[in-house]
Image (cartoon, rainbow, N blue to C red; front, side):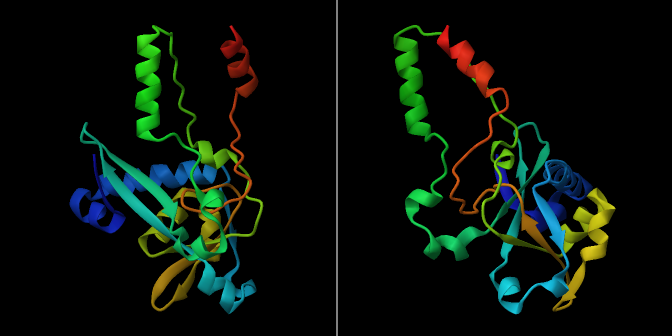
Length: 191
């Protein structure tokens, strides 16, 4: 898979890249990941500290484009310890070792993918996200309610969004994932 910035992806793939971002933004909107805020109610400090979105296009082996959006959490790094910001996902090495042990012991193994796993966990603190440029236009296509919150800053369209759900690259202390069907998974694992 090749990954590139959304602007490069749009130049290379045209409407297919825009459609991929549109699909990504639709998922974020449908899961109520953020709420638009009126920029006039925000302080200059809040606007300065808002996390910028990073929009990416991934080229899959199948040739299909897939949109990915995360927040650039670099500005938050000094506020939290490494333990508070480390992603709770398994490392590739740990997964491979576990699979080798499972194979050696001839265990039955099942896997599951929880779509947008991070997006099920609520944010416990106020985090402001800043969407700029073409991403603003795409978000307005997803849901017209966002049109009322567009402002122009330095000649570019901007949205300020309050994060309601955990989001990639954003530090969040709760470390709680909501896993749909968790009781059912626990029951299956007991047998």
